[in-house]
Image 1: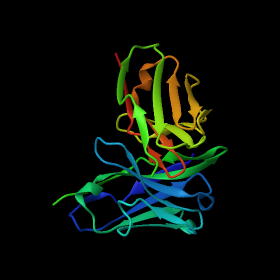
Image 2: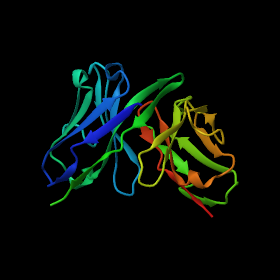
Image 3: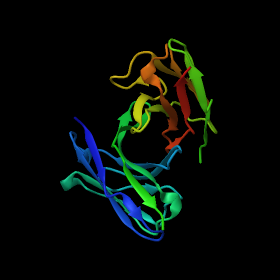
Image 4: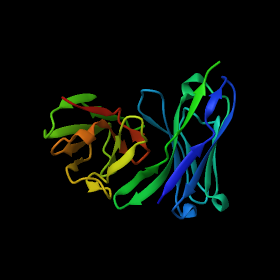
Length: 121
Length: 105
């Protein structure tokens, strides 16, 4: 079964840092682009970052550009999100999500169970 | 950025009812439109991709249609297990609609 398992979330003070990890299994990780998507408590979904299979192309939402860094280690089947200069508005559930290429465009499938990041003093 | 406007933001319907959710992008997106279902306390799940293609394992009571700047998700006969929030997403630049919360009347 395809599985994505996030870890690394927790409580951090404003201005602090956190590194999220996502362990992938059940598929050929090094052939898929990956995403981080977040969801603030009681709110909708917000795309955070994207990385291609070989890390050639990386994109960020404006809200995190310059503070977050996405990376991957294909040898370890792992995706990462380094989050620096954290703000209260970064508080959210962070999901690791595979890019699913289908005729007619890409989609997001599957999603991990999420890891909760809380930024508070 | 392409903005995605979903309506209604919530609805309450009876078991067996036909339910329709609409998504309107701020500009034409061709067929780059996907739908997701998020049950309470769970991660979202892909329901429909490329406007109308049902993801594997999704019940046939779900269907999608539309093009350009208006898209629709339809549940032909609402079931108790369909209680969830539904999100549309455009895959040009990955933005989501605000969500539609579906409840049973």
